[in-house]
Structures are given as C-alpha cells and as structure tokens.
Image 1: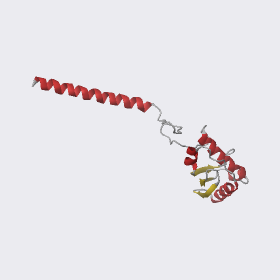
Image 2: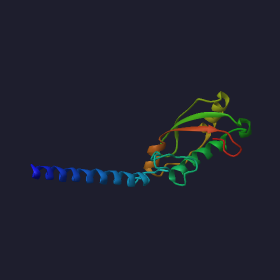
Image 3: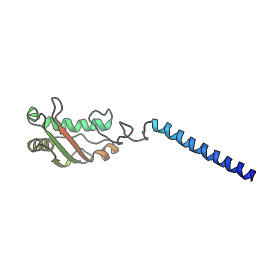
Image 4: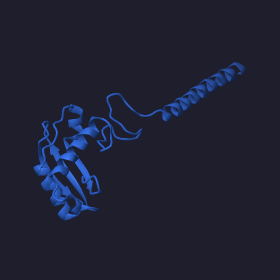
Length: 149
C-alpha cells in the first residue's frame, strides 16, 4: 500500500510538472508576435494581407498604386470632402479592373469614384500573393485634404 501511494504521488508530480511547463510555454508564446513565415502581417492578430495604405511593403505599395490611379482620374476632388463610399473591384494580373461597383456611401461620390476607377490605369500585380489578396478587393474611401480614396 505504501509503494502504491508513493507511485501515485510520483505520477501526480509528473503531471503537475507537465501542466506547469505547458502554462509556461503558452505564456512565452503569447508574448511573441504571431508572424508565420511567408505571411504579411502588421499586427500580431492582424490578417496576413492587410493592404493598408501605410503598409511599407508590397501590399501597401499596391494599395497606394490603386488609390493614386483613382485619385488621378477623380474630377474635382475638393468637392467630395467628408464624403464616404465603399468601392469593390476585381482585377486581372495585369491590373485591369474586371468589375467595379460601389456601396454604402454618398450616391454622387460613389458615382464619381466608380467613374474615376473606370478611367484609371492600375499597376500590374507582380507578386502572386499580392494578386491573390487583391484579386477581389474592397476599399473604404473617404475624402480628406490629401487622400481622396
């Protein structure tokens, strides 16, 4: 009986050590950024492909190229201050816009953004991962003093 009690106590201590080690590992891993290889991330919990205007990578560069192409064709940009619109686009690899639509915004501004997008020449997608992430895109556009889309 004494031997069985010792054996049970040793098993309990072994399990306790494993649990403590698992807790320690999860704390250490929880403090490390979640940044898998070949994954574009700007925050630990963010998407692998955000494509934000201010991203300093290929995704941000592509987003800025799209924004700049539309802004270059937008008639009277100052007219649209404080207006909003959601722009939906589908692209081919060479940057050709295959589908353009708008939603959720000021009707006149959405039409102006859509018209500008139809006239714009967009940059080609040189990176297949960037193309995969931008192939079907949605952009929230709001006019400020320097950025129209």
